[in-house]
Image 1: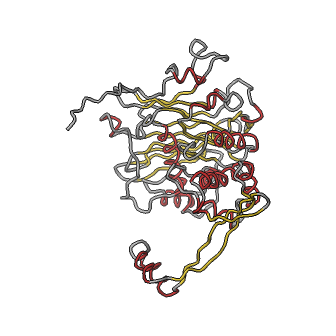
Image 2: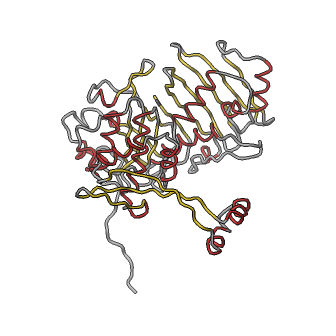
Length: 432
């Protein structure tokens, strides 16, 4: 589980911001929200509110950037890191970006920090707490020589041979964790951290992300339990009694070959020409109406049903495993009641999974049985500098928001910021 995530100089964020999952002093909804891990009270959910273009998505993208940097190391030293710093002042544009991720995995707390430019990982370190802070490794990069220097903590035993091999595999534009993937030696600390990035921290889910294939393949592989997913759909009032997959072979016609020629790789295209058949899987929803079952294909369902099928798979994974999902615009294609049901089902049934989501749905503030103040975050962009700030509802004092105050009303009238600053509706256009 994530304890804290800090970053600076990334896209719309210039100055350091921190998204914290450390629970505050309140014991409100404690059994639903708080997991005790490695001596920390960690929240299972964080919701980020803000106007359009206020930087909500940037927070999720920063976390996803670190994940991709660790899991998908570059192949050659002349490749550039796909990093966009804050571009609206000269110092930031030419500076390094900073990321700090504190998390708990298998009851061990880790702190992973790095400084990155588009050319290189300039510095990197990993510490664990047992219970005091101890170094696993630290790394610096000589930009002129394009070489990484790595040192290990006194509690970490690494032979000279393995250290030399790791340095050789850690290109100046890769992380040490990425270099470890290419090195033939065993380190329980490096392996555990890599496993957390690979297995626990999931890729960002955008409104445009189609999870159909991802969820369906995991059902067919038995990673997601079909019966449990069906139960989630039933409880959401979709009248779906069962889902099933039908295998079929499609004959490859000349028209289909012409269509695929520019879309498939050369090898895939040649294979299709030889086989003359494509294996296809159809997802069928069985709807129970008046005691009768009516099958409908996935494509025949509404966008809302399709989206909730995808989210039901995400929900099943979070309930059963220690998954961490980041979902941008979580309310997209979902009725407000269905969104509330999704969140309540997650909070009620999950143990140590986490959900990080952005939304415009301010009506959630009216749900006193749903949100704790320390799970509510806001993003706001300064008009004069374009700099994004991230802050929590818990940051406000009693003079702004009291325990008995309506968060909805305070947010609606602008007392909490993070709302669009709209001008008058009149457009001084000349009519033709």
